[in-house]
Length: 125
Image (tube, rainbow, N blue to C red; front, side):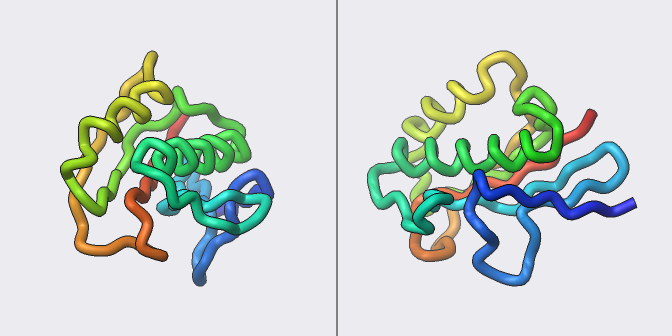
C-alpha cells in the first residue's frame, strides 16, 4: 500500500513530487533543500546554516510519517562543494548522534535553486 506523506512543517514540493511516500514499513523522503517552510524563502547562509535547515525539514517530514530520526536507515547527501564536508558533518552529527544511518555524500555541480546542500532519506520500522 502506497501512502503520500505531507506536512506544513516542511517546504512544499517545488516540482511534481511528494515530500515523502510510505510503502509498507518504509518511508522514502524526497531531497530537502534549505527552504523555510513558513515563508518559502531559502536560507542563504553558510553550509552550517543551510544544513541545519535541511535537517529540520527532513526531521519534520519523518515525524509526519509517525517515525523519528532514529528510524532513518539511509541518507543521501549532496554537497555543492566537498570542501564543506567537515563543517557539514559537524551539523549532521548533532541530528544523528545516537543512531548513525548508512550514508553517501557526493559533490554535485549544481543543486536546485543553487543551494549548498540537499539530503534525501529512507526510513523504516
